[in-house]
Length: 312
Image (cartoon, rainbow, N blue to C red; front, side, top):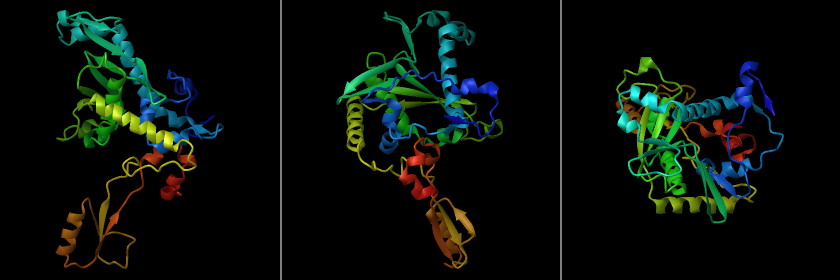
């Protein structure tokens, strides 16, 4: 069931509510994205009440992402050759590109789009669908915020995700470096002149992949941990890293008896301590630790006791 608390117009409801994800859930099957999620989140997701109600607005971000993925795929299937020649790529190169080929001959540049693969391991089936494989390189498209790109805060997750795709598709993914293509949801032209800010709404990063052996070991560890927690009343808690805690700040209070408002706030403890010394060591420095960001995006937040430690 869905509510419509923000009165999203009826014209957009079919777009938001039409499900086009092609994975059919089966017993002991786990997707690549679920494998990367905290074990607690994956386990509790199977325990959500059937009558759980969500708001339609919660679907917007994922729907924008899936729509962009579908549009990219369609462009390669319908107009790629004309588009590539328009930007100056020689026709002799463009003509070598083959999309979703059944077989590849010498000289071809194979491009595979949105293909799902499955592999059995430890009695489980790992299932994943990459966005693209271009001439042996796995490519993933992310619709995300600029800050995620600038801080590289999700790079380890990206590396694991792309590495698992290679583990699933070693015949197609032959390069040791993958690529993340970012499409920013909050890019600002006014900020694009800053030296560390992306110059356009689209950017990319090359991501060195884990070895096949390390990837296999990681998958086995995750499945083993999942099996250990499936039947526990309280699954293993999410780690601080998994919870996406914001970086702490350090507040200087000139009068320790009045802690309702800081005199000055610093991003590092060394800066705060230096300022305290400069004040003749009058006052106090206290750390400020924010609340975990991931809880705000987690589908099991309503039944998670760990979340209540921070938000209730």
